[in-house]
Amino acid sequence: MRELMPSLALGVTRIPMRRNPHPSDLSALMAVRDVAERVRANVLHGHGAKGGVYARLAPVRSDDGVPEPIRAYTPHGGSYNYRPGSLSHRVYMAAEGFLARHTDVFLFESEYVAARHRTFVGEPRCQMRIVHNGISEAEFVPIIPADDQYDLVYVGELREAKGIPWLLDALASLRGQGRALRLLMVGSGPDAETLQAHAAHLGLAEAVTFEPPQPIRPVLARGRLMVVPSLAESLPYVVLEAAAAGQPLIATNVGGIPEIFGPSAFDLVAPRNARALVDAIAKVLDATPEDRDARFGALSTFVQARFSMRRMGADVLSGYVAAFAARDAAVPSRAKAHATAPQSA
Image (tube, rainbow, N blue to C red; front, side):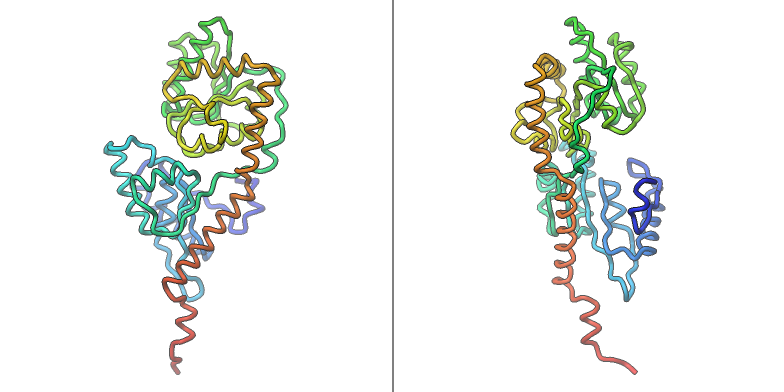
């Protein structure tokens, strides 16, 4: 945030929030309102389920100089990834349906989440765009391997939903085959202690190193192969960043990950399947350097063509413009109303 500050004309305001619904959301909502009114915001754009609530429900008061801002929402999987039919899923989809009526433009980050919205909430009645996450040209610079590399690396939240127990089971199986593999796990999360205990139970205490969150590229340099064993995802940046850098990569066939892999999606593995992870990991580690470079170089080229930051920015702005135009077409602007109103003495 400090590095971004010089580039942000409206500054940065950090507001505490809980991951799940909580009474403190009311004070956060009022804080968002206060910031929006202070900077005279034209757009309130919420990312993720909780950010989407704040952006769409903040009671921003308009004045004669600034009309009410448009409300934009980018889902990031979250509420859409609960098991269909479960109580949590029904509650969150009902909430998404209510909030959709307060949305001017949906900017879905993947075809996957857009399809989930259509299936469980309904076709958006406002403007919508598919705006894939984008990455900068710097992310495509090849990574120089570290001198002492781990065989496998994981980067992300330490949660069971990320599929880490299956990764640990796969590592135990691979070591049981006589492969003395080591795993570096970088991240934090509510299941950290449970996962460390599971690693110890499998006899992996010396084979797995846990480290706190840190920038991804130096971490990728420390591993021969990145593994993303998630049970559910939207369009994860860690996969984009690893793919862009040409990092050897194994991921599960969930959420929007197939959109990142494109023509290579057949290489993805089924979630909750340690055996599939074992086979996929062994295939990459046993491949010749030339075959690995060709496989993951092709993936990098595909990502560069489809997931650029420039394209993402243009698509977001296009969504904003469409939302402003739709609002102006539906309700005459205040300026037009004032121009035709009789003047009083």
